[in-house]
Image 1 (cartoon, rainbow, N blue to C red):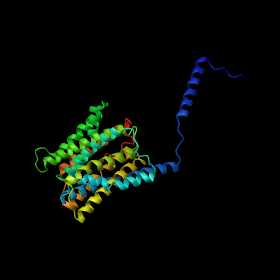
Image 2 (image 1 turned 90 degrees about the vertical axis):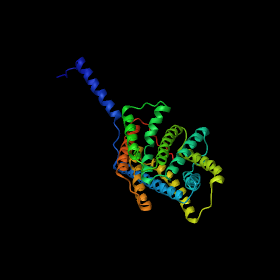
Image 3 (image 1 turned 135 degrees about the vertical axis):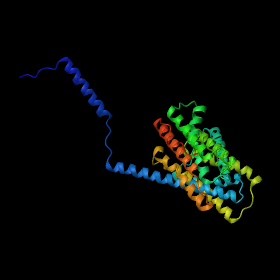
Image 4 (image 1 turned 30 degrees about the vertical axis):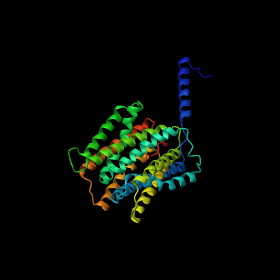
Length: 336
């Protein structure tokens, strides 16, 4: 018996099914091997470890800045030695990666603007640490990503949806919880400087995002370091004083720890994406609370913990939305 020929309708249905099957096969990706999955997991764990090392260094750096204030070191000196003693780790990083052309750039003016913002942010945050406990200064600093969203919308006309605006408003409410307007327990000068510092860091984040489209991370960090040493070095003759051995140890440790924090923070991005690493940035608050208790016997009040919870939740949601929109590029190196 000869097979019955397909009707025209059956032929069309068969063609559609075949085409759909071919499209599905073309989109299918080969399954990852067990070794590849284990290697990816190891890379993420290494990235998380490097990020935790960076936050530990940043927490220790904040404590060293506060100790420098107590030793009578001028804020310009603190910034200068942060870069002067942090330069060797940076040069070793560049030498190790054999990127000897890191100093080359086609956007020197952009680096000047980024350095001006970065130095302003550092000057404000370093000064704020002379007024505030570590926990409060650190918590307010977590508002920087929220300011970055705000500045992106105002300066670069970036489209910000309802979700991210809600996160920004909630985060700023958390900042108010920490500041407690009308409560004189914390000096308003220190609180104002900390908020201005977070705003400046937000501006740096937006600027680095734009520079990162054409410039490498090492180029950005190297130019910032060189300009910072030059700018603060010109002011050193007017503010520098003699120091004892203990103070010099604080200053040397400040620069070394700050330089290592920069390297660990950047290296982590080679092994894990931003959404995986971002939650671990907030472990710096634990260091701030621990060091504040061990060195100065300070205890964070309930309002600081509540405000920190709101700010951290808002920041994490902002990072999640940035990731969904594809804006969290690995080149966006940490501002400080």
